[in-house]
Image (cartoon, rainbow, N blue to C red; front, side, top):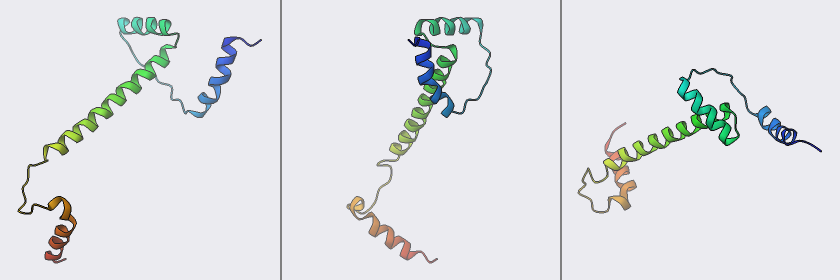
Length: 105
């Protein structure tokens, strides 16, 4: 009968081989290292796994923040400019074509 370790490693090994891993070293304060060690033990995970998950969450939060910033900037111009045309949302292509026709290239 296979042990739990052998089952997990046999399932995890193909995943580990598909991902290109880069070994890196970080410095933590004693308090950070202690918290990470305790969390790892509590979750039944390695400290490295928790560190990778933390980096993933940080990056995802940053990406969401960037998207929210872009959205806010785009919404900031809504209604900021006026037009003499009341049908601009429906006829914008025609008006744009007319403007381009006025400009000599």
